[in-house]
Length: 135
Image (cartoon, rainbow, N blue to C red; front, side, top):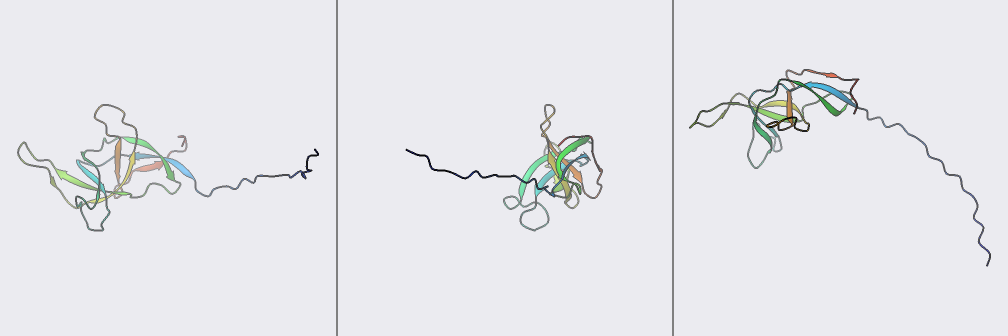
């Protein structure tokens, strides 16, 4: 039985550069005592069951961290933060001031008690591109 002749085909692949460029940024975790959430319903402030709670009460660690996978333009507001006034033994914490925009990123916890959640105030942004870090 004869085999059927198949004409050889040359296939080539073309590399097309992606316009998205991710960068590493050094970002300062600079929020006071409070909690964070994702605004989901368009109403200012956190509404339980309507907005998405992230974490809290927490306090920023006042340290810079490397945040990866951010586009080349830099960090942008992606969550909301509400400062809290600490209560006492028999009084709950209470919101203090208006909620504000923050840049939120997460890292693996570094030590006991570290949630890995980090926030930087957009109004008091302290971040810079870190060309020496790898993505």
